[in-house]
Amino acid sequence: MKNSSAISDAHGRIKRLLMALPKYDEGTAHIISLLADLVRKLPHYTHFELFTYDDELTQEVVEKILKRELADYFFYSDHMFDKEELVNHADKKCCIIKNPHDYNFSIWVQDPFIVIQEEEYGGRGVILLEPHDEICGSNDDKIPNTFEELALYEAKNIPLSFHGGNTLVADDFMLVGAFHFNESKKIIAEKLDINDDEKLERITKYHFTHHFGKALKIIPVGNDLNCKNKPQDAPSSEPFPHIDLYISLAGRAKNGKYQLLVGKPVAVLIKDEPLAESMRDCIVPIVENLEAQGFQIIRNPMPLTRTKVEKGNTYYCFYNNALIEIDGESKRIWMPTFGHGAWEKHLRKYDIENREIWHKLGFEVSELIDFHPFVQDKAGVRCVTKYMGRTSIYHSHCEQETQKTNSKSPKASMKFQISI
Image (cartoon, one colour):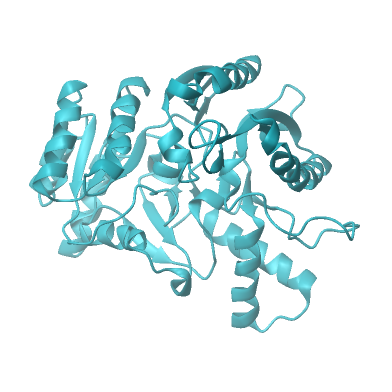
């Protein structure tokens, strides 16, 4: 692909958003509630691609919610062999993509792949990049290949290690979590037989830019990195498995510096203060390293709470794991909230404080539903969604694509990135 680049996690209008809706039961009811909330609150120009488990109950629940929210929809399988019919349905709010296989999957659709979009011709070409074969293994890893079988998107394995949640793509740089950056170094070292660490670091960054965008600066993030003048007592473990759980992209300040919101652990209960303090100590070196690289850091509260408010297992409220849209002067964020029910007394103030931090940065804030069911599984709204496009990709290129496909194979001619 020429002039290709990973889709930004903050910049540009959110045109297309993917959600995975597994077999419906009590354990997945919260993802259906979130679908309704997002359909209600995301902009009119945002279209949804809904990858659904194909059984009667799941389909019934999904259609019922869409009808309740007055969201028009169509089934991709009904029109997948007729390009003109697909174009006729492309303006509908939702496209339901039934899984043609019998495997179930999770709601965590952020991680299995990263979306690459070609800049030429209005971003018509889209490829789903998957990590190195040897680190795959869950049913979620089958989703990109299923999309390719359905002639929706192309899928391609590359010799790098990554999860979507452990990367953040901004305007001209890409943050990569330390664990997956180091795993990628191991892959490159083995394939190219490189022993010199500085050379290996440089070549690994080159491979990231080669696949994810030549204009992107690759910035590893974490404690387990080979940094110059690193104190001997510096922590080597990472605060969380993925950087999107505690870091948010917030665009550039007037001085040109890029702003990052970084969560600051706060104990809701006095007895949990030692846990929060330990996590703060783990994050501080990461903040200092990012500041040294020129980032403007804003800290936002990230409360540590419990499953039964004052007892039960502890978990953090991941306000940073949000949906973000920076489109010129327009800035918007869809932020999870936690001050609900029994937690209202303890946590509503943090909903408000986080909202006001974003307001001061010039963002319009939409508060999403109660996210306790998600963060109790250590995830947030970005974890269960995937930006599939930030620009209109079909109508602007329809005529040219039709001409191209006349000379291609039958399978290639069916490839179609649905909805605008």
